[in-house]
Length: 122
Length: 297
Length: 140
Image (cartoon, rainbow over all chains, first blue to last red; front, top):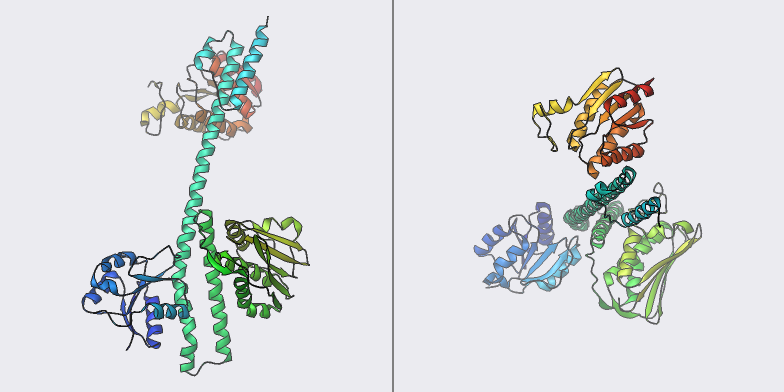
């Protein structure tokens, strides 16, 4: 069963790099350039096994996105956040892990292996 | 009975004394009430001296405040700039790491392309290190540095740094020897200790002139230490304190590149751990940098 | 028009500025009079000293009498600007004569400024006429 990952990042180059990397390594990928686009995709029925979420985005920040999905049925989807900042204490759910930029592919795949949910959420 | 002159001298000395500590009890009324013109002039002069000094002091605090603000703005900028740099570097790292697979697919993966990609990856690592240094400086100077301790073996931390530098040392011609030691367990901030050891080892390679480098660890009761020794250009005694200062470098910048931040950051980190960092060195005889930290940093 | 006993600033009207500038004038070759305003400000100092520099433009030596009678004691900020402006003229100044009348405090201000700047030649006089004479002697 393919593991599906939703990449939410406003930087088009990084988004594309991640998409190619993940697809080449057997993952299914959906993309959103921002929080609202991601919410629209999720509302339309997409259920990834993991969300890769950039924190610093215009209009809706990563934190704001997390707050929006937390208390809904979308809140069961594990989230790995990507940020330039260092780790700060415990992560608010549904964020499971934090990837500090820059990170390499090994670090990325290890985090995905640890956090992706085995079956898509209902 | 005192003469008028003696009384005036007393008065003037009293006022000078007060003015020297920032006080002045002379008023316009007092001046007007003085008996003769000479005393009046002296008192007026003293009052104005006091005013000039006060004015100078105010101006200095205003300048100091401006300076503080400018430093804060600079640190904020450094912090923002270094964060901004991290995203493009992420993209670079991921792209470069994926290149071998792509080249292999196209049948273009050979010694040349492999070597070139290693070079590119090394440069990107260097960029990352510079960006990290910038953000560290701004966090240290704005007092936002925090350590996160975990139970770890100091020998293992230092050994893994030595291993990481194996290639670099070889390329510069230096042999790198790690003096093994039984585990030294304690509560350490692993990534910060790693950062300091990395800084010392990269300096040893850079200034080592291709001569042997040795790295070791030791335990002395409540404290433990690690050291990095090279046999390179050495540091003249008059520079040995300066090199730990911000933006200071003892090596001529025409020969050696670098921001001059590494040792300053290392010292800040070591001191934040409650430790000390020191150097023994002589020109052309190499240097030994020693870091001593408590088991519980 | 009458200049009032208040500090004038950059918002002064055109006719006030003209009246202020008119307080500096040439008496004869190389000799000027500077009639100081009752309440000095950074603005009036710059205005009047600019005028003096205009009138003395091109002269390698000159002297002036400054009439300080009626001037209120200036604060530290004004005194600092005063010293700066006079210091600028100092290399060409053959003599400065300060007319202070009976005001002891103002006499002290003038002397302090003179010492701070290091005038080549300075007198403290009781009248403008005396001051002009002192200037003429120094210019000879």
